[in-house]
Image 1 (tube, rainbow, N blue to C red):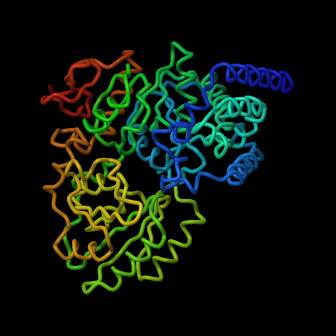
Image 2 (image 1 turned 90 degrees about the vertical axis):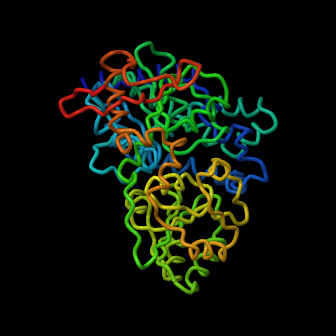
Length: 483
């Protein structure tokens, strides 16, 4: 019996490999690297130096292959029972965007999370087997070499410096196809539209008449994103929808559902105290020296504030350690994003200082007035927060940050209204209940095969975008909706 099962499984792997050769699209799966609009390979891009390294590409692949020894992950992956809704998160931010809806979704479900997701809040997740995916990628070396050889210009540079990601996209496709064949989900829910997993799942779903895809926005977007290609998109607000419309034509049905991952902090505030606490959030663009200069200036400020330094959730451990040491050296606290949810972090601060980051929007939803700190390579306003007036305080130097704080930048619940273009539920009964709304919609699609009109009104002339009507009310515990 064991031999027969083994042969059957190997046959399925072979079949999935053949499908991948025909269907997988490594360039769409690697949109972040293949897209000239995003331009990670351009010398002027802040992250270009980090991306353009052949040795790093090889080292990343070796690290993924080393995970192949984790046989338990692969066995659990291959033994999942059928479910109606399959959730997938590739990062901690994506997981946080989906966790509330997962808990409220009443359909049968499973949650797949990448190994980088460390904080699951008690949700029983299935770890995506990156080692298995890396091993399944090996037969596709020829395809990647052939595609790289035929590519030109910007795309060729992308293949050169990200060959491991292009190769891994095939193995990820095969691994996901095996899961989908086994689980047979009605819906696949993803919180990113441009990572390796999204590319694979979109291609797999297009092959099936039984499985549809749902995109839940997990962070602010730009016009460099790919056009929406999911069946449904639950976007936070009109700003995101406007930007996606600029990226190109789409047949996706869009619903403006607010920001699920921010439900725990919306409009909460912590009250102004005698001692100001300043939160300093970093992203991949920020330079260590700029961070050190800012911490030193805050440390020497006349009214020395309490400072809490927090790196981006994707910051590697080897980079977080020196930042934690830097914080301690200047009398600041350190917030590890993999240990402390952003909702808890924002609840501890009175003022936010950050560069290119959607944490500005989350701070405003918590009643915290942010300072846009834009030294050196920052200051491009990629999300349009400055242009739209959402963020009104700009500092180009550490001294200007201190000046902004001295002028009384702090908490005010009145600023939450400014977030309406970005979070459409502001001012509605669903404000702070976006996860409830998304969970309800997922169940409705599973039960009814679509989303009915009822509480929704058309958001524009396309007939494919909808927002909550003025009479929409959250469902009561008894399941009735007040109209």
